[in-house]
Amino acid sequence: MCLNKRTLLAGLAAGLVILVLSFAFEALIQLVFPYKWTELGSIRDLKDPLMTLFWLHPFVMGLVAAMVYDAVGQRFQGNWVEKGRKLGLLVWFIAAVPEAYIIYTSRVYPTGFYASLVVGYFVYYTAAGLVIARLAN
Image: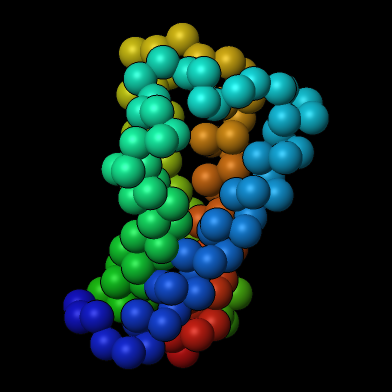
């Protein structure tokens, strides 16, 4: 597993897809289960300079997913769509499911937050997996 040029570009492209989809999906969630994520407990003040790192999260996840694909993608069978879906499911299961479990069992947050976390991350990581599989092949 290495971070070659192709893996880096696939990861950054996947990060951009995650970022764009997260804005779109969050807008839909707000229509069905409105809540203000800035009012949830234990969130840093938006004026805190460290919060700028929050916006790097999609790109970090995109790069991690691309590196995972670089390491295990050859074991996935099928065309790039099948491989991308498998990668997205793998990353979702490893990253989002435990995160949702920990947050659900330790905090009282609105339903929309959990819907955004579980369903949203499934959508984001599946789309990111498709982008990575397409660009990495």
